[in-house]
Image (cartoon, rainbow, N blue to C red):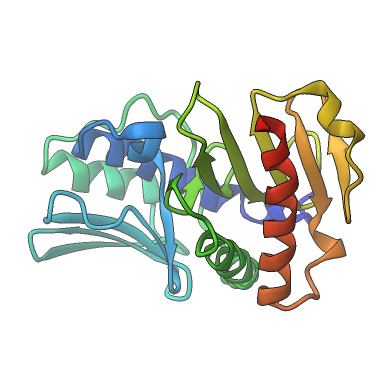
Length: 240
């Protein structure tokens, strides 16, 4: 993974968010579709949301700080300068929370990388939230998954575990560049015979529609959300 790629720039941020996800999963009950592991982008922050009406853990991408907030008491870590791992261990020990099974090294972050990511993530989340407002029936919140660091919404038919995952990835070990995916499951092989207005049918480790982000990033958020919805309607044919 190139250090100049989006994911290369934010590997340190992703590692911190993976630990926050582990902490979150200890603080709340198990939620459907792994919602207890997911984080959210809210304004300039990556956050757990308020857990049990008492606790929030968040990374402020402009301030470059982590806040562990519990019952109106705040603990701060400077992600640019502090020893992140030791400070976080000290904080969570006060509340009887374990850092395990995390063995991820936590390195200091660069303000320029955080600003770059915030600009990208803000547009991505707005596009997907606009798309989400077009959905009906059963669907999830817009989640930020720490394993792939992708944003996604899952929509369900309500039958036989049928679902469509709609998300945008910053890139991964196989694809260095960010991309949009629309992933119907279980996937019917004849789906890839349908003509797409943009992108390709991706088959292999995952099946669905793949669109390079660079091909749509200059469109307005409304235009992108409309395009995502058109692709969603095509993917929905998988269940007809």
